[in-house]
Length: 601
Image 1 (cartoon, one colour):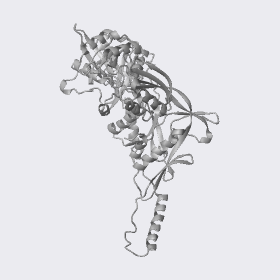
Image 2 (cartoon, one colour):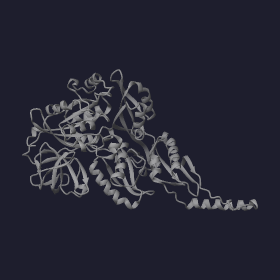
Image 3 (cartoon, one colour):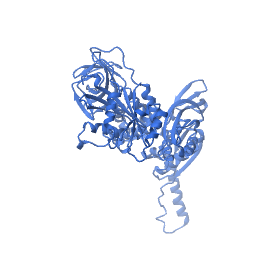
Image 4 (cartoon, one colour):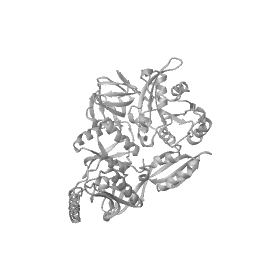
């Protein structure tokens, strides 16, 4: 594409399940980018997990050529983004690479929590926002009400909203025209020194790191030497091209465009998402602002089941970090599980996705410990420390007070489910700060609640309580005082450090009882009795016992004196006692997974 005025960069943003991936499918089909025989639904969702769960996890860029009615050819670069609150970081990266955004709103559900959140993200980057009402073909579609919500809740001009059915392709032609007419072309000079932003990467086992770029100034050609500004490493470009669902090689990438480069990068840690790429011969002076640093909110440790696989797990995490810049990890160790990594995640769904990707894409057999948040601990000697790992929790005698992170939770729900949702929020120690009736049927309620309470099953319970109609979004706000205790799990009298948890004091008993019950169901029976105990310090607050497998030592006694039988039983009892003192209990992997579950499946 020679003319920068004929380029349009935009992303598709919306609440979860409002039809972003389906609309992306229709845009790709409309310009015949993929042959009909090769086409499949959710074509940009390349991971099995995305298809199975029906959600987008990774933002995917694609370049499509579009010819207008008067014969002008445009290059449209768009990104299909995730909708779940855990993947907001993916959305923010996609937004920073674009000049415009299609804000999708489901005609049957209206404006939801993530619709608002993503719109504000787009407004922060000064994007041109085009409201698009999707699913107009559904029986439950209420277009006038949705337009009223766009006008009132979003403050956008509802008259300019486009009506689309991504499922059957209605309104897609009008959408293409609106993209060309309303989204501004990129700014930048092709004569200036090269300045490109790395907005994503992935690892190819044959070609090394594939770097995804948005060019703001200059151009890149094959054989050119480029420099990564964060560490001054230099590479020669071996191959470059566009994303046309598959990678499509070209000779040059120019300012305003989006594409990829392959430069034989084998050192994975050299590439950082958010870094600026410039020319080695004629470099630019200032780096691009990049992205805000991601702050993980959920922490858990990963260990290989076989300690010999530690190095393989390390390499797998490095490659995965390339493709998921929000993953944070550092080395960790446990007496029970050996060497592993302490990881930070953006939420519990993010944790589950990382676990599945490690198992499927990298064939790792791993164990995750119970998730935790980052607590602020004030020590008696005046110091202030942050603790997310129970192993680092100081002795009670050293602690003056503790604080935990709170969130501002925004829930938009039909008024019919308001009572049940308020009860759920109260159970999670939430304090209501605001309630607004958006219209006759929908209510927005704002709660301050501890992040730790949202970790496990809040999202699932919210969806089941509201039959899937309520939507949820949150922001981390501040730290507030809490009563915190360290819950230890003892197996056969020995503490298992990998099962320790930091919990709110009033919930410690329920949590300990639940963990003990789960473990008693998962740990196989031994030749000796196994006590499973939950303890706070030296106080045992919960216990379950796995009874011993008993061999019938009386089977050979067909008669004789009772003292003979008693002697055999006493001998067996002594043997069991001795075995219990020296016996080790093997913890199966599913025992650790069982502890993470908080509801009956």
